[in-house]
Length: 121
Image (cartoon, rainbow, N blue to C red; front, side):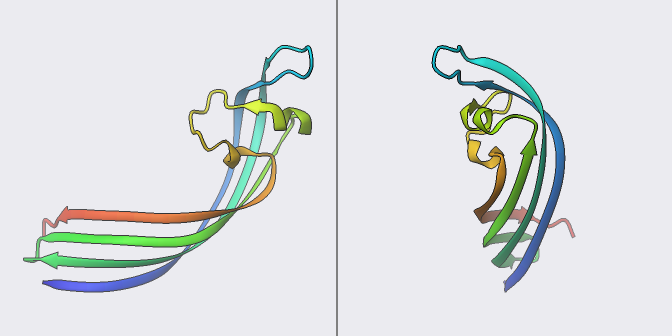
């Protein structure tokens, strides 16, 4: 049996431009309506990861990884602040609507990974 612990630092960066189509809740007597707009999203993340891995009989591997960190999101687009606050998820199915909020935000992030594997060599 071969066992080891490890740690690491992870830095991530992303720069995305994409189109979105969302429903906007109408104000007062105005009905809901659809809007298509361009989104620009940049993010920078820093994570500290800790892990454990063991190898049985030189072939079977079991391990896990835990991490904690934060991500800074900067999102800009061409819709008004009022529309941004009243938008509903449109063509994007992720329920974490706050990830796409206009503006600058710090978001806590957590990593968890569990591995079971077989080595060929």
